[in-house]
Length: 179
Image 1: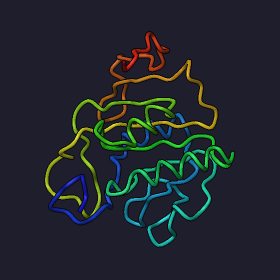
Image 2 (image 1 turned 120 degrees about the vertical axis):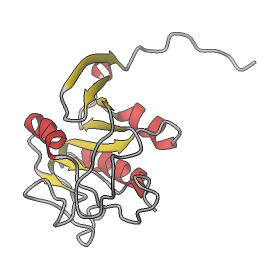
Image 3 (image 1 turned 180 degrees about the vertical axis):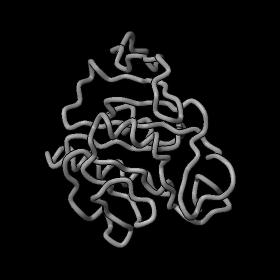
Image 4 (image 1 turned 180 degrees about the horizontal axis):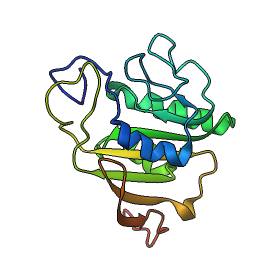
């Protein structure tokens, strides 16, 4: 079952074009690694049959992964970035701070986190009625993480900036002992 819509067994939702384009203008994506013929947003793309998790990624990568298995896509992105084949990987994900991957992967390794104000209305052949019932975020990973420049930002559903930005890395202020 999909996290997007519990009644829907599909993991195949297209990102709204204006949200995608706002990030594509900045990163000029080379490939969409979790796409279908119906929901692709880049000229070059991998489908489920291609298995983007088993193929090499390159350049600047767009990924709206199956929300039923986000963690493996995040690990794949970090591996591809550390190999030097990719420069940037941008994800559209649900905001779920209760997951291990949010704390261990996203907060630890993302260069940017953009919380989306409002609900994303996905597109495509398998979308039911209404907006995504969960909050969404754009997460940017780069192959040269600079902890001094990690930040949290808020954007609207069309990708435009709300003007609210917070630096993520404040450093350790105090370590509390467990005694």
